[in-house]
Amino acid sequence: MKIYTNIFIIFLMLLSSTGILAQKDSIALQRKARKMLRQGNQLYQQKQYTDASVAYRKALDKSSYYDKASYNLGNALYETKNFKEAAPQYELSAKTAEDKFEKAEAYHNLGNSMMETKNYQGAVDAYKNSLRNNPTDDETRYNLAVAQKLLDKENEQNKDDKKDNKDNKDKDKKDKKDKKDKDDKDDKNKDKDKKEGDDDKDKDGKDDEDKKEKKDPKKDDKKDQKQKPKPQQGKMSPQQIKQLLESLNNEEKKTQKKMNAQKAKGKKVKQEKDW
Image 1 (spheres, rainbow, N blue to C red):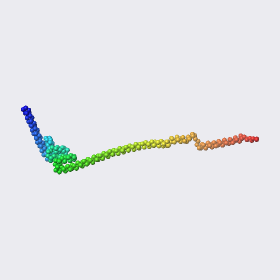
Image 2: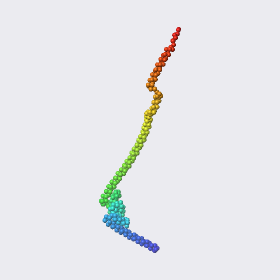
Image 3: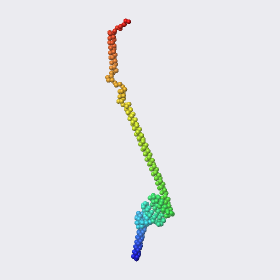
Image 4: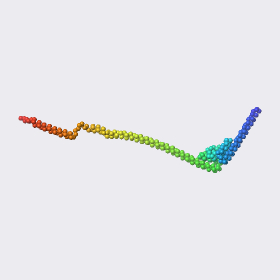
């Protein structure tokens, strides 16, 4: 029994010594963190904001929840216009700070960082949190009014942009529909023109054939050959016809004289009959 009692006592002594050592280490780290904080503050006063940021980061490495170090780091980053990096440092300081006025200052500066990045909704929320912790801060109240006004303007602009986008989409949709209707109409007109062209072509072809039939000299000659008698080969000239007629006339006269002479020589006596 005594053995177990002695072991238990030794165990308690070890735990106690470990806790003491850890406490000593924690105190040592806090001292180092405060030392780095003071160095950072001196650099900050000399407007060496980048070097001050380095010192504040070292302080936070020693004590990650050192709200004063995170707050001052946010200020140093703000002075070098690193607003996006400054914002989370103010948030950390606001969450870890136990004093309301320190919380209010951290939220106030967080709102200022949000304003610089045009995050007006975030700025409004930060200023409201600041006023919850310090309702008498007129500067924060003024900044809140400005942020709220810019937020309303932004929301109105976004609303107008959405409306314009919708109108543009509707207009594009209507333009596409009008273009499609126009293309369809043009296609119909093309088909109609093509059909009329084909009809005109057929008509023109028929008219050309009719004209060809009417104007074709070969067909006209054939038609004339059918309607008119063919010219006789060796056709006599008018002079030859005249001479032939005169010759025939002379021949007829001679023949008439011969016939008259023959009648005079061979004329029979007509007999009278006795009754």
